[in-house]
Structures are given as C-alpha cells and as structure tokens.
Image (tube, rainbow, N blue to C red; front, side, top):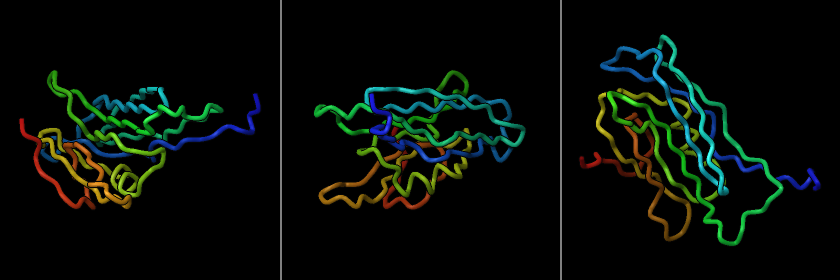
Amino acid sequence: MDILNKKVYNLTPKIQGNISENNIPIENLEVTLEVSALNETNEFKAITNKNGDFYFNPISISTIKKPSMFDQKMVSTSLTIKNANHYRYLWRSYLPGYEILEFMSDNLANLRCDINSREKYFIFKSNKKNHDGYEVHTICNLHGGIESGYIEE
C-alpha cells in the first residue's frame, strides 16, 4: 500500500459551544458527537465544564480507499445530549459531499444552547444548482439560515 495516495476527507470543523438552562451553565453534561461517512461511524464524547462549555477537535477520515460508485457521498453529523431520558439535538444534519460548508464552520464554532428550547429546523442556502438548501435540526441558536421554524412534536 502506498501511503502517499491517502486521501483526507474533512468531515466536521472544530466544534465548541455552551449549554445552559435558563442562562445558568450546566456542568458535567455528556455531549455525544456521532459522524458517519464512507461506511464508517465514529462516536466521540465530551463533558461540559463548570461554565457549560464543551469542545471537539475537527473530525476527518484518512484512507487509501476511494469511495465506491455506490457511495452516496453523504455525511451524517449528530451532536446530542440526554436530558431527563430524552435525547436533544444540538446539531443534526445529513449533508452531501465530503467538505465542510461555511455555515457549518460559522455555527459549530460557537453553539449557544438552552436545554429547554424547542427543537427548530434551519435551512441554509446551497450554491448547487437545483438544490433546495441544507437542513439542520437543533435546540441551539444558529445564524445565517434562509428559513427556520419549529419542529412539530
């Protein structure tokens, strides 16, 4: 195997944020990041500090294998917390391509989340022709979307 032919697929940017409840930071809350791409799923965990802050390094996959012709070239990113036996999405997306989009970097670098917020959807503009946009589900405050609303319960 020739390691010089390795390809790096950057899947997520640096992720950091803050979790609170009615503006009071939540300490020792487990945050789970799950990233699926190229027939591989990776899970990472972080714990909020006394200020309610958490952090994940950027995620990438390095491989000599090329995606198969059946590969959908999609990346599933899920950032969750568990609150009173309910899982809440800080970020949930299923996006095309193996590239980090600008709205991801802009929002995931500074997530602000209140654990009591209702889940919302945000749609971000796509530069691709005939594409409706990229959808993200979250309880956090995001910016830059062209449309947003609450998820029906």
